[in-house]
Length: 131
Image: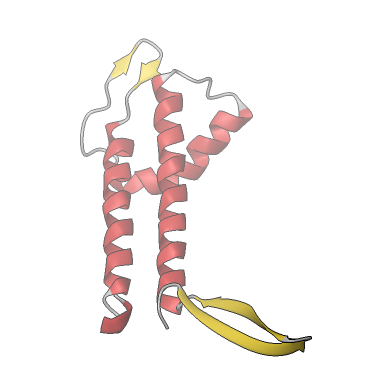
């Protein structure tokens, strides 16, 4: 299957109206998407959600958000799973109440590279005519 292969079916009918012949065509199109393309889209979606979550975390920390807030606590708890492997790589500077978390920035970069790398790796499994 191709990425967005379209199949077009054309049907022709001829009618005789008086001394004139009328030709009518009806066109039906269908689209098929391969499993490889669907897998790539899922990987890009999941990677995008993780990166967006980490970006919200960085923004909340830069703005000095109240950690007692339910929403802020939820974002920190959910994103801490993804930041944990990168904590302690660099120092974490604090400016008043604002906090710049370098481990979250490193995590964003690594997850973006992993997302693109895995999606491209899956693209290698497609047959040559689909590329």
